[in-house]
Image 1 (cartoon, rainbow, N blue to C red):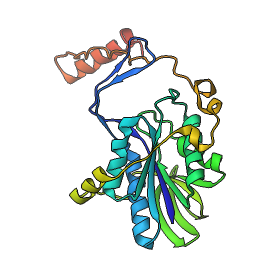
Image 2 (tube, one colour):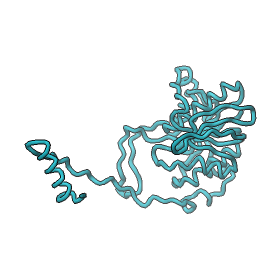
Image 3 (tube, one colour):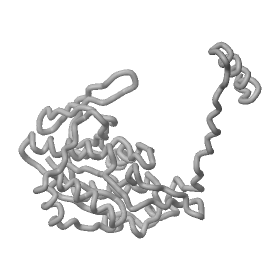
Image 4 (cartoon, one colour):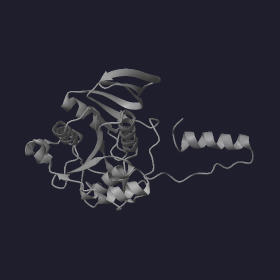
Length: 263
């Protein structure tokens, strides 16, 4: 089984993020990690390969040169191959453009199953996976928390829905987006880390995937960032005074009515 895993490098939760002077870009500390939900996709792909005792796991990301470190992490975990689709010359972060590029890579390399995280924790759009499936014309299931191999041509998946879960039997090829609870991602062993450091990771130009430049340049974007704005400052905390609990409640109600004007 040929399994493709698409992942993303995102800013570390502890990274300092500032809005640039132009208001349209961000300045981020050089602290990056693999997207949280993508770790479940990597782990599940490795488990499926090891369960059926055949096939390979190929990991790919669309990003700048620094994203190669995220690919090395996937190799260290147990992935077989990795590819970096270089985004250096393409400034647009439009999700439809990203999905088109990743779908073109999948179509070129071939696949039986595609896995990716449910959403990226930086942009939170949660639509890259489903759009890839639409571009490829294959079935997809989102927010998967369970995967079982039925036979060589199909799998059974458990997906989260509002108020419950849904069990589906699907025929491959298919695309799944992974959710917390699917598995427990492994910590790479030192042997895996050493292998990852030695692994050559090819860089792919998006135009080599059979996509016209006008389909992926800035003018093709459907979504554009107009500006970034910091959240409003929180008002200072006000301590409600009073000689007794009853008086404090009375003073609180008065403050909500006269100062905050919410009642």
